[in-house]
Amino acid sequence: MSAVRVVAPVRVLDAGGWTDTWFAGHGRVCNAAVSPGIEVRAENLGGPPGRALVQLSSFGESYTFAFAEPPGRHPLIETALVGYGRSVRVEISSAVPPGSGLGTSASVCVALLSALALLDDRPFEPTDLAAAAHRLEADALGAESGVQDQLAAAHGGVSVISIDAYPHATRTEVLLAPPTRAELGRRLITVYLGAPHASSAVHADVIARLRPDPGAGPRPDPHQPHHEVLDALRAAAADAATALAAGDLEGYGRALLANTKAQAALHPALINEAARRVFALAKAAGALGWKVNGAGGAGGSASIVGPDDPHARADLTDALTRLPGVRLLDLSLDAAGCRPAPDSPTARS
Image (tube, rainbow, N blue to C red):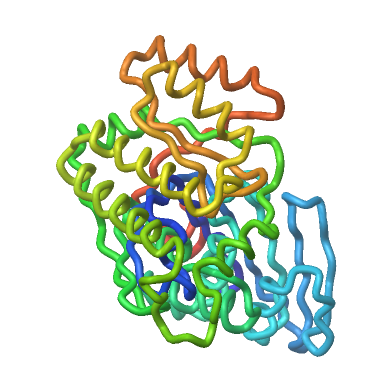
């Protein structure tokens, strides 16, 4: 294959987030994949190996580099391309703002690794693709990375992810009845909070509270402060999955609210002021539930399961767009996960 185009979703409403990490040890997450997310176009350049052309449309950036001397401008991308080994051009674009807290970097990695594998006619199975993407982000780059984002990007759908001992995780699809999927899709509102999400000192503080001794073993000491908050987050994920499987959106909303309460207990700054203004409007409109997407903190995005009445939802979205810096993201539930785009040569073969 000389050229491919691959798309991958991002994720929202990650109940149980924070428990899929090394410092939680074990956990449970329930999230939903949404699109449009990430698109990667990859093309073998031929000629001598060892060079790459990288085009990042979301950043308005383009550069070339030799594999022997990667410049470190985008280490995740460069490491993947060096590992591929052949001269290649890649163009990466995102339908969501960088730093939106939607697992974008994991989706980039999943889509990029999938595209490079398809160029060599060796497609990944979704679980293997997610594991390879996580290894690249966590091991090769030493990044703080949970396991939920890669699994959501690779598989799509609504996932419940069980982590028995980080990083080993099992992903199970939450099967939604068609009316439940349609109703959740209608009610889903996702807003960008006006600034990129930043992995700040707040996150370092949370990690230090959860694991004051990083060498203490694979699981947190249950007697450490905030251990009970991790249990509340895990319970919220389990309750969210159970409610969705039963078609109980009110129960799902309650699980999201329980997660938001636990996240604020983990550190109050994880729910930023912009998110609090969004949630106040959601509550006044009769929304069922809401959550900051991802780990929380400054910037990022939030998702809401809005009210049933379409006029109330329209009034809510109108009010949200009047908040300073807030803008709506046009995202839909994605059942398919990472895949060749419809007009990719791979999709037609």
